[in-house]
Image (cartoon, rainbow, N blue to C red; front, side, top):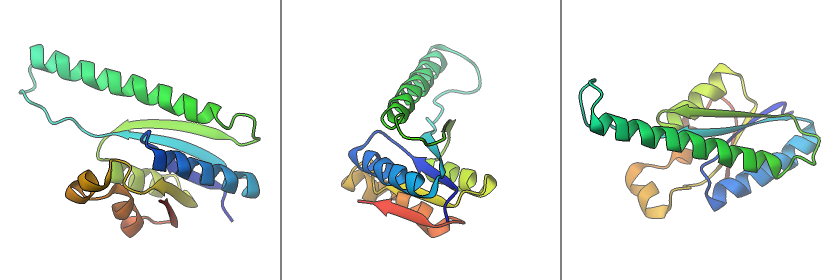
Length: 145
């Protein structure tokens, strides 16, 4: 039923719960899991010229990429004793759009995602990634509360 499962993660408790569900499903269906981390775009504060602000902004992006890699490695290690094929994917962009694009382009069978990982108030103001993904995905979406 499920051969490829996409699991967007953000480090929140709800995304950790989503991963646990995805691992259970992957074991049951012998599915491959892709752990995904989407780094939101940091709005540019300068023109294209590299200046002090540009260097600081690049340092922030580099740190987010590094932290994302460490986070995904830790998640993958948490179920390394299982016989599950796992990939990792990090991208910079609007999280919901990037999740939808990845799921469509690579023909995933299921997306397992935590609900409002950034918190209730921030999620309400900014719009929930999980809600957007569930409305526009080309495959089934399992939202974990």
